Length: 451
Picture (cartoon, rainbow, N blue to C red):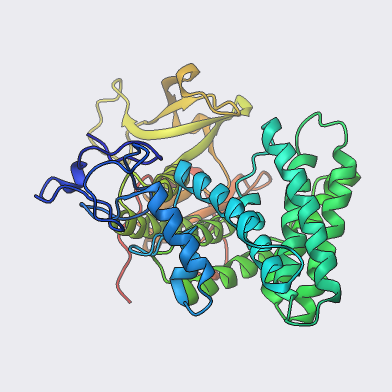
């Protein structure tokens, strides 16, 4: 049996509960069976064992009560989006159901002619907007309706002086902009330029608010989105400042780490973005180790089947791929799987034996492993992709470099050598030109030395 991960019946405990003799019950009403409408338990957070199960109707009732009670503070005010027990975000169909329920609750119990009602509607529809899929027609219709409501909310906040609306205003502009960006990025969408232009305008208004609030991190992240749009509108490839992007992603990750803790899904996702920024600058070894740590954190905090853990594992597998080229086929990419010794060479000396690489490919975009072939290739016919982790072996003169690890930064055609960067986090040491015969692909990273 597998743990339920969607809003569906949960009549029996999962594998994670095998050592727990207690039958699951709704943690809110304590009933052990279905609710009055016949619906069984749901649970799609990070709770495990027999904890965290509840009827959807009970969760909605609890969340409505928590949202209405202005005297409550802390996590209870987020009961529509996060489980009060494990403190983690709901996911999948349960997240969808609760986001819709939150909008219905705001529409039923709050009017938009006062500050409290406007704030309730704003948080409900902006949360709902994060789940809108621009590829689905019904979602596009709903997204346009939410944009219209957010425009009314923005108009109200311009004249209301009862509170500081800056955060809601910026978030509303970001919601509208992100929806239009998704619409504008859809291939073949007839009004893509208008959508991108609207997205740009709202991102620019958000930047103005963030600047007034001295929120430099949000300014940087939003300006990045504007740059993406400008490149698309101009029909050119965006020139990325990878150093600036790494600095921004590092700050963002640290912000969530300090404010939400390492186990929070938002923090882990920010960690993945940080690792990607590291990889973009050929800090491949550091990036892979970061993602491996994130996978361990997510597995312990959320379980192996949680969406967050699955996403981190997918990312980790991608970072662990070692991409190469066959020199006679420079436009195709292959995945190196392992080294093998030539069956035709009887020399027992590992340094003089002919090296072979087992390759898989060529790799198509999107990748389809079923169409790829696995075969051997002489190492002398293979070149390393930029960012490949390598280890020095067989050096006769500079023997102190043997077993040192680094990353392929570039290839110099004139000298026929690779520039290998020895790296530590945030520090790239001077590149060393290395001949191909002394470099081996590093398939498994060694354990980090304790500092």
